[in-house]
Image (cartoon, rainbow, N blue to C red; front, top):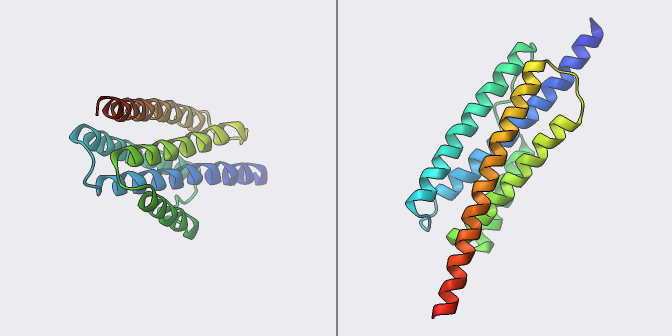
Length: 165
């Protein structure tokens, strides 16, 4: 029984780390929504991403509860420092739509790395928890690819504007 308790602690730790990633994603996209330089399509996309990230957090919390753990609901001090760094980075990069998309793309890369690490750790957890992580990772990959397309489209528009002016 002690082994099961130890195993659950590791699984709970991994799931809580993923919850923190979603806290950071949500904060990043909410910050992006506060900028005035976002077109309506991108604004709607960011709102969908926030909503889906909230869903992911809820699903992860439920898995933590199933393992008799406590889900972390607040961002720890490191999360707050990371969010402050993101705000500062956006300030210096500018609040152009291109800079906002680049920052969101970076945040998606961080999230994907976290999910990849969670799956690579080979932490013993329930099959349902592993499937949930894999499903969420798959959805994050789709968001990442979509953000890359936004970035590429924005780069093409900027390049054409330079060429034709």
